[in-house]
Image (cartoon, rainbow, N blue to C red; front, side, top):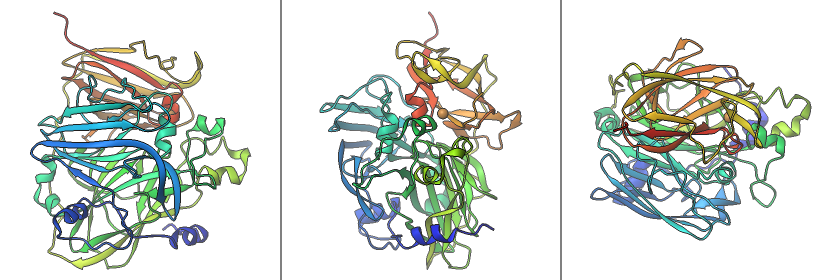
Length: 491
Ligand SMILES: [Cu+2]
């Protein structure tokens, strides 16, 4: 197996602290009945639950100094926290957020992965909230919405990468049918928000050189819940549900839990029909999530969550640029430990669930479309879909309400482009003609260099304009986004 580079291990190994986001812990803080042992720092973010069907809170975007890893960084925060507060609602609940922009620039909010209207003051990325302004966001989580981990982040075209790389991202949990499965209910829970940063000596995010903007900004400081190498505690003989979120603007993570079994129970907002053991490693592109079950069945040692090198098509291009550029951009050539798993007290045995939730296949499509992702020039944009850069005033893809379509996403470039669709999740059918191993709802699919991916998507509700785009956020800002308009059937 992989050996950890000694220097990397020492650099990162001495600074670990033991806080992590745990929904159970936040629960226990609320109810004074801790189920999980934690240590040290009070770095748990605030956790907002819905009450009597309403999740209501004030959310401020502001720049301020925050603890990050073993230093203080001046970041863009939600309510002074990086990552932002955990929001938690149940299916059927109303979510009402009074948002205030105290940043020096325009921003807004996007609720990544939620199946809610893209219009009005719901998940409307065309809303702009100028510096100093307020905006109420409000929507109802549909009663049949999948339970899962979603997230919120800025989506104001042109500054998305800068704002997310500045720290703006927060987890949003929807409790649904999956949370009623007895073994899942009995599991301890943790959320791991993966964010990378590139800070200057004053602890401020650096603006990348043009070449790094082109590749997608990436940093050498890899944090998990704003910490360097936090420790998760798994109950001996129990079950730990770990929900991973890649909230980095460009970095693609390839993760391995070293010498310890882990089982996939869901991807993005969807749940698998049954848990599947992850044999090698787990790749997460920006915006992707993974819902994992870790059984506490091993020797009670410490186990490492490793980030393995992954080439998203930029390493070769950087060949002539020298090691310091690789280091600054956090391009690793050896595994890095980013979190640890340790064993806690023995609890009642919680087995893995035998079955979870099957996903019904979508019916046959009424039409097929192609989306070609490539680099070029169109009105100053250099990242294009079907030869065009993003234009606010143009509808690229009109579709009919109540229909199903098959989309082929073709990457003609030598860099990965993770494709994300707002409002409606999709089912991935195949990659380069090979069928996708899971029947599951997803909202991001990584289309690797020169690959093509087929997906099936339905537009059953929520008419209006929404977007699809590359989730390397610098690519989105530089034009790799299109407008989808879901049109009511003509009368
Ligand atoms: Cu891209």
